[in-house]
Figure 1 (spheres, rainbow, N blue to C red):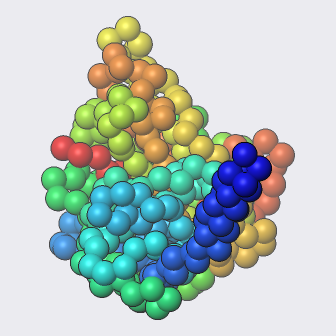
Figure 2: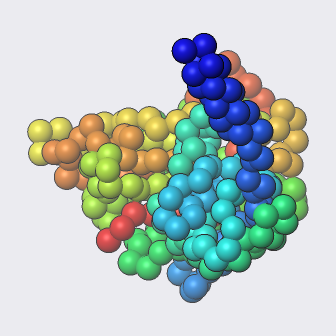
Length: 294
């Protein structure tokens, strides 16, 4: 009996050692420095992007979301299908990262070799069948107009160089005599904004500012005689003094429009409140795009 017990213990110990001492599989690696955006036609506007992450799939399985640049371990070897999606910070929030739904994916069949690094250079583009409205301030007249309560307007500038992003940009200037600025669009096509959170619509925008400003949705239906306002986000200064630091953001419109399923009309507004009578407020805008599927 004692011999049998010792034999069983010996076998168990031997098996345990085999499990513990089994060498780990050496991963293969891919390195993605960034994801590039290419344009298929001039109607898609600026090539500006702020792709922050790579969503990496192998053979259709999500391996992870990686902030760029990144060297990514993959526990595969041999030929496998790699798919990469471009990721953004939704509404500029680091904790809310998403695949941008309007960029195509990048695919490649790779021969993955353990303990080696393969450089990947993904290129994406806008999907087809998208509605893209563009205000790039290259035309003589801006597509935003001051509301009746506004005592400031938007102008189009092409200098100084640090205050324009590409070509010309939109400029809002306010001083202590300007209490409030509100600019509105007047676009019939915006009445087609989706009102379902599962149907994405975004505003893309380059901006630089030394003072906070807000962007929101205007909405009304048959029961409301005038537009009501629903803010999306307040954007904070990119610079404290001079305007020399440009940012890009992706704003999720459906966060606002999904509350108004009965609305028949939509538009956008930009507002700046100078309740403290500050001097030398500067807000610069460029490449505003409104995008949703047709």
